[in-house]
Image (tube, rainbow, N blue to C red; front, side, top):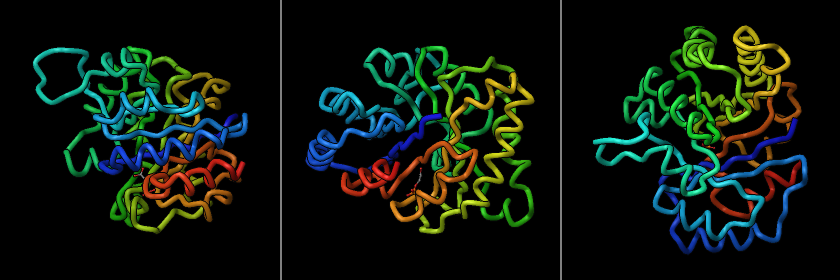
Length: 244
Ligand code: PGA
């Protein structure tokens, strides 16, 4: 399977910084084994789509669970698709913890976005408290359980991001990450035919940096990384995808 290196820019990057980033990336084609992408703020999506090299996928950080209607301030996955957006993140832990998104809403967002033909990176992960009380696998199961009701699709990717590792500099060890990825893979193969479940890309996220990415990627069920801080500067992002 290919490796995926996806940057989550969150509410960062000015237009000037984006211009510098895109210019630097343009001369650094990734190897054929790697798919790369970034998700800028919504307001910068169009600019990024227009000015990015063809090998850089551009995604949204969120989308509505509805296709259209009276939902002030929301953005339809249909509109994202029309604009040419390649993918959307759904269920990032900051959406869950800061904006109260529930598993049910996240399931609806995932299903609606997939219907439009967008690729979806479904983000899941446990808090420190849940890990310390041995709830990790239970929490993960609950977060992906809705997938048993939808057919397998190549447009779905899953990012395991332990909440305690996001933006803290405290990455999960390669073994900790692999243990959860293996569990996700096993759970998917209970929902879908095994050969299909094995094709769903599973990304790890949480303090991934150029100096720890290699070890994480040697694990059997880790197919890529969702990267926040280390994806903001082109130099560091290039190092991440040049390591393959
Ligand atoms: P981080 O963020 O790499 O800065 O820990 C990851 C994420 O939030 O997706």
